Image (cartoon, rainbow, N blue to C red; front, side, top):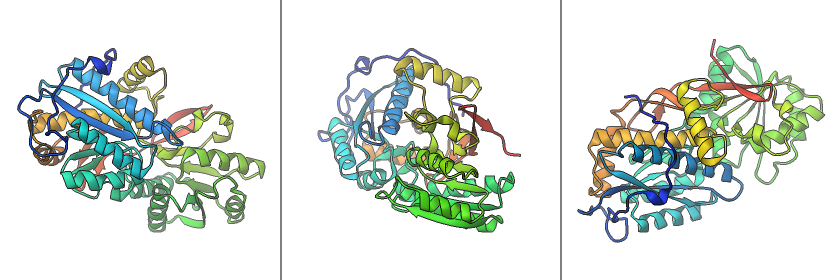
Length: 392
């Protein structure tokens, strides 16, 4: 069913209806509370540290959707309470955040934002049989159990979709890859890209790795890519490292086509970055604020009014997550007095029965493996802004 997204002024979280904890005194049991009157959703992600741009976007995207849904009558007539915890993109801190939210009374988790912490936390939600929906953790193991689902593409899916797009649109036949071998996100995309490239006739002429300890000087990797005759360089990395690569390539006179994945989102907003260096860069993303459809423009306007910032894909994924939970919870007939495990079992089934039109995709469905099925979107940087590309 299509999500109804009602443009609404953002209410303060403190104005939400007060509730009793719905899952026992420690928040982690499976027994419900007969006097529970609200659903309690938790969120986890980095709001401080190097990845704060991602976690803050998710936190705010969730808040906007929660406020809209509450103003429209809630889920099955019940309001939502929402609490978000900072994990600084650290696995140990993420597990601690999960335990804090359990003590608060969390019944379902939206998170975590980044892959390695999510892989740690999914062990906890699996043990508790708590429903978990991550907006943006892309590693396969981040949703390895049947209680966990994701809104975004997995790393392998991004690698495959990138190779298919490059091949189907004739962007290049000789491709170099520069990737972070110490990062599960980057290496996971790289591995699937190379596998798919072989099957679609793309020649990977250079595959150059770097690590977290060597991500400032890319002269060696760029020289090898240049010497290989690569027409296009695939960058399955985050925008911080990509900004350095683009600048260093420009200085050495290397000007191939550039193609990346959703980690590129944020590049044009990076302080001190010369956006002209990104001209022509293409990357997979589920969302761009420059899209002209009414749903996107309403979301962007409401987000900017509420938080004074333009939303990125992480905010859109998180916003979609809450409407997905609403749809599945209403399909399953959830009430706040149900136990955590009972809620989770009902949500597992409902998630495979719903179809969602969201900001990050149309006609989205989920399999029992927790993976979404939706069409990828590719954007190109033109004139210092993102423009959606249509596959030929």
